[in-house]
Amino acid sequence: MKELVFTLKDVVRLPVDGFLISPDAVSSKTIREVQDMSILVGSREQKLSTLFKLTGDTSSTVSDQAVLVNGNVDSFRGIGKEMSGGTITVNGDAGPMLGEGMKAGTILIRGNVRLGAGSSMQGGLIQIDGSAEGQLGSSYRGKGQGMSGGTIVVNGGAGYEVGAYMTGGFIDIKGDIGQFAGTHMKGGEILIEGASGERLGAEMTGGKIVLIGRIPEILPSFTFEEIRNRATAADRSFRASFYLFRGDVNENGNGRLFVSVDANPQLKFYEKYL
Figure 1 (cartoon, rainbow, N blue to C red):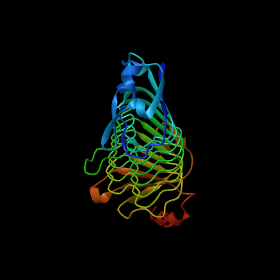
Figure 2 (cartoon, helix red, strand yellow):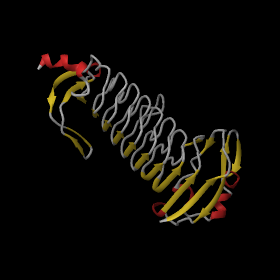
Figure 3 (tube, rainbow, N blue to C red):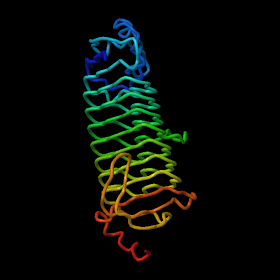
Figure 4 (cartoon, rainbow, N blue to C red):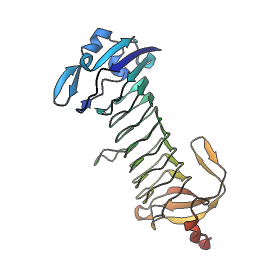
């Protein structure tokens, strides 16, 4: 695999359209052609070479192209947008809408990401070493099309509306998350290894959420079914006691919530319905 290295020359505070930072955009081009590509910074176009020092090699195919970014690019929107192969590694923080519409390949962020990472993602892998802001694997407001495939792994926590409108794929959050995870969810799986904010699974109609940590309460529009001695998420299995809830009945939903018994003694009153 051939690697093209983008080294940020200086801090960029203006919003930047970062879709050119992708194997799809740079493969089959010469280094000079990449340097001369125009990128929107604020309201003005600039050449990539004004923002980055570029070194390394380009490949003739997307699948054989690696992109390495050195520096915090948290003002760059849409890095890896609609990516169809190859790899992107960012040694720093990344901006909003990372991997939007991504189809294949791997994105590794050695820092934090801003709003909307993996929005409408269809395939591939996004690995985030730090934390993610809200709407991870979610949808644009009004679009109603969340993540449909692929995998997102976050080693830290995440914000609100994780997996909103999700129809497929897998999201694994190692830390805590905010409110409304899995809202309007139709399919796929979310694993929350930390604590969850309120309104987990609101208006979900399908899919599965596994919660290892604590939650303040379960929405009353979910029905309690039973206690299971195991829960699975993707290829992972957890042997412990889990409350199984199904809903959201307000939407005639058949989504499933697996909620740790040990981490949530405040939910013990549900056991009288067994």
